[in-house]
Image (tube, rainbow, N blue to C red):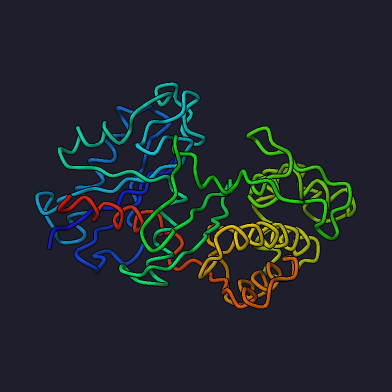
Length: 335
């Protein structure tokens, strides 16, 4: 069986995995520095060097790798060409309009497929729940610095759209005014929209909107004393898991925003399952269960026929991108 490599390129690190048939050859994280801030040439060399190190860890030779799957943050086209403004997490000017899929294919001398990181994570979550040959439909929301995700229709179709911006779930508008406990809030997204999912449900949303909103009502809270919203935002998850009321209110607002969004997805796709992943829920099982319960609490009443659609936590969240990229790359074999 030919081996597919999965490469998840982030702003600071690259994560690798290998898929041999239906078996992943690396269990956990296998990271290498990305150096994306130094531009495409240096970053591509880093990817290639890291691939050799990862292959040695997996006990395979570079020659054993038949195809490569790559995922990155967007915005990028369906074929891996970054926006003229560059990628959200890659600040070097050289990334503007850069065709990273074609460049990596030339660098490695192997066929390379491309997905954005949200779609790659969604594909992995779907694969775990339903297997490689399922005809099920799922919707995934992955909460990180922004809000990524993807829609898998009938088992293997990742919605990309005409220009690659299909499935940009973070920029779907939600009726945020109906979220309890947030009267008067005005969530602004970095994309320029007001009230999309990412503006309420992301680390950026905590820093820009939710934490300032709740701290204004609780000026004596310990996070207010830090005087640095960026640092404070990164502490919210840990404090919420410990039961801090203000931080629970932040996560409850995010869960209810997700509930509104999932209601829209249920009425659009009637999916078999909903998945939630990302750093926001890299927590203990008790907090994850609470968060899922709050998502349901934030949903409008469902039809009786749809009320049993399950909400799952994304498995292996830190390796989801690389694994989804490898699954996508397998489609190149025999094509």
